[in-house]
Length: 368
Ligand code: MRU
Picture 1 (spheres, rainbow, N blue to C red):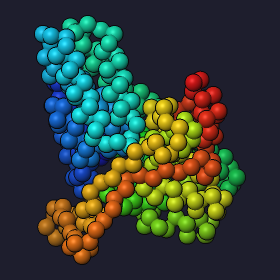
Picture 2 (cartoon, rainbow, N blue to C red):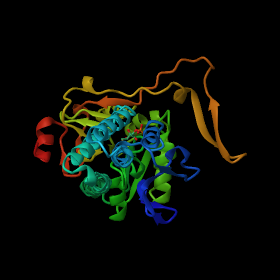
Picture 3 (cartoon, rainbow, N blue to C red):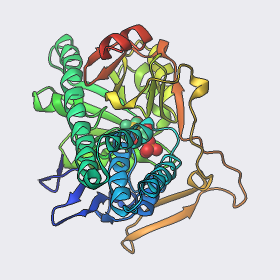
């Protein structure tokens, strides 16, 4: 995607030294672009846990590179010690964020790939596999864009070329992946195809990924958008101002249940009540092929201070500041995700095509 006129990914190896992995530290967006160097497994674990990087695909790609760094750092004289070091790194990483399935998926894929090679070849193999995870993530998203484009094109034709209004929640854009994004890929593809699109972007409290990140992405890539408070979607739909909802997901069960940023379920309910098509965009890496029911999904609970405090840019002094919104001792619960049941979802836009959110359709699409 484009930042200040230049194409950019969210994670990449340092071109002069591939023992350093670079990320955009998203805590500073939209007011500062800070590139962070990750050099140790601890650096990676902190970056994922404290959300310097976030979003399903990017968490997966970061975990892939983290395992490559683990291979670099692991003792290599004794195969037992090597494996133990890698397994500990894997556990440390998996514990950082429980809901996004891409994290464990990427760690397992790295461990699996290392089983195919000797200790001597491990470093090269790990770099190759981590790079493949990152490259594939970008390719998956590009392909989601093409499949989603067909849906937006159809709406545009039905509206005889009038503006297509899309509502999205949180940030399932390129900042949540390596490139393109999931929910945003069809939007970028539609814009490129010359279709008139406009996006309502939910602010998405309490961390405001919509206001801070999706808005920033759209600014840099010339997408027309309007920010709305999280509770506005239902009203917009009643006023027929939304033609389609497209959201991302952090984990989608093979039975069609979708875990996504808190508040997604309420958008899906409003969409159902107003006959607005509700689509979820995801790469194959975000399917959970093991869990069947929503009860089995671990919903991340974050600290209450994210709800109690607001962080923003103080224009008078030109720096970020944090302010308390609530009574000092207010208790706050902070569930990061909710689960939307399949009956509220019109379809899943995947890298392989669009399908209904049910086991038969999903298995058929992925030949599983
Ligand atoms: O807590 P985050 O920011 O890592 O949450 C992830 C998200 O941005 C959303 O839930 C998104 O819609 C799905 S991730 C592609």
